[in-house]
Structures are given as structure tokens and as C-alpha cells.
Image (cartoon, rainbow, N blue to C red; front, side, top):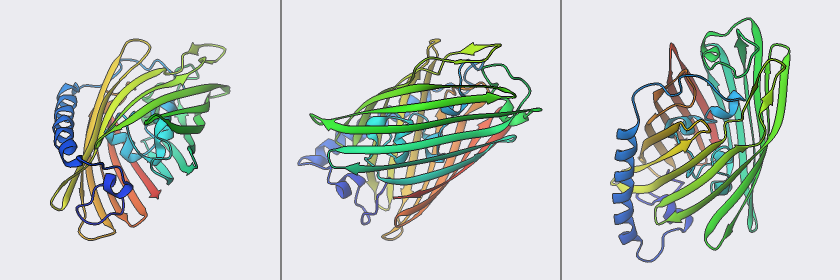
Length: 327
């Protein structure tokens, strides 16, 4: 994503990440990036994901922002909300983002902020899902986000992350506290995310393990946290005249062996300095039973501020997402 540079100037040039020989690196990087995107998007099955919902809490299985929802795999995403994807990338993009998502019968709120403090980067974030369900048993059916029910339900997560660079490799960790409530039943637990990332010319590679910890327990049921191993690549700053191309692709593996590929492509248009318009489309094998593979979104940015929208296809319904990003 372009970051307040002049027309034709990539994010890496703005941030000083280009090195001598960067044009040659850019050529092989673009080839790798294009191959990755084609392979990832072709490899995503155009069917729903999991047959059943198996894990809790639900909120950590939902993307925090419109951009994250469309791009799918965030193991290498250099965004403010990296605390929810790969904690090693916290602070690469400083600022604050606040997101809102409306499903047919529930609402998701999210916020994240990150900054650099000397050799370290710090991030904080939170997510809150509110709605109704027909059952007080775990795990929550993702269809409840669309059809509701007679029992109130909520799901929340709060996180604090710390990242630094060691021998040109970014490393980070995030401690989280997660909670699920359905009817009169409630449980909460701590969790840990770990990540590493490295820049390779105009491509960022990332590895992360999320939701390390004990599961949640209700008197009637117990479930695991969605322990998730993810690897991803993200390409940025490929300029073609007035347009920029970026995107990401990767794969996640869940404890039951489900393999979840995801990929998304983003095209940016800069008519004049300070103005930026972006459109993106993504495909993924979803983690939740009610999710569908397809999503798309747009962004309008002016200087430090950007407004994002995304549409997510769900079985029997949809999700509409908004976010305000301040860098």
C-alpha cells in the first residue's frame, strides 16, 4: 500500500527499505509475487471451509479489519493491526485503526494501535463480538452471526504485543486474554501468539503461531482455542504508471489438520499526491462453517486518513465492514 509518497514512489522507497540493486531485486520479486498470487488463488477451493465449527472463542476466528478480511492470510501483513496477525510486524506501520462489522444478526468491533519506541515496537488491540444464539453450548455456531437466537452471546479478545529486530529478522510476541459468553455461561483464558518476519526486497515473509493456550470450558462442553500455524508472503509497491499492485498469499493449519489457503490482490490508484484509492479482491478457504470464500473491498485515503469498506460472502447472508485508519 502506498504510504504518502509521490506518484510512482513505492512504500519501500518512502520507508527507505530499498537497497542498491533494488531494481534487479524488484524483477525477481515481481515474478515470485505473481507466481505466488496465481498459485494461491487457483488453489483456493470455491466451496465453504470447515464442515463444523470446532473452536472458541469465535472472535479470534474473525478478521479484525476490512483489509485483513479480504487479503485473508495476515502472517506477512505490514499493517497497524498486525497484533492480530503476526506480532513480529507490530510497529512497521504506526497509527491507529478502528473497525466495525455488521453481520445479519451480530456486530463486531475492533481497535488496534502500534508505535515504535527505540529498538522496540509496541502494539495494543481489542475485539468484541456481540449478538444472539440458539444454544449455550461450545463452540458457538458461526451461523448464529446470521440467524441470531433467544440467548445473548458475546466474544472478546484483548492483546498486548512487543516486537524487535534481531540480525535483520523481526521477532515478536503478543499476550492475549480471550473470552466467550453464551446465555448465563462464560469462560475466559490467557493465550500467546509468536511470530517472525523478514523483508526480501519488496516481499515480506512471515511465520506465526497463534492462540497458544488452554481451551474454554462451559459446564456442558469444552473446546480448544483455534491454535493456528500460518505462513505467508506479501508483496508491496509494484508500480505500473498511475497504478500500484500489492497483495498477499499464505496458508494456515488448524489442530484438526484443516489446511486453509488464502490470497488477495490489491490495486491502488494515485491521481495526485496525498490522494489514494484502492480496490481489492480475495479468496480463501474459510475457518468458520458459515463463511464463504469470496470477499472484496475498497479504500479511499487522504493524507494520513483512510476509510475502508469490505463485503464478505456468508452462507445465507453477508457481512459489511468499515474501518477508519489513521497513520
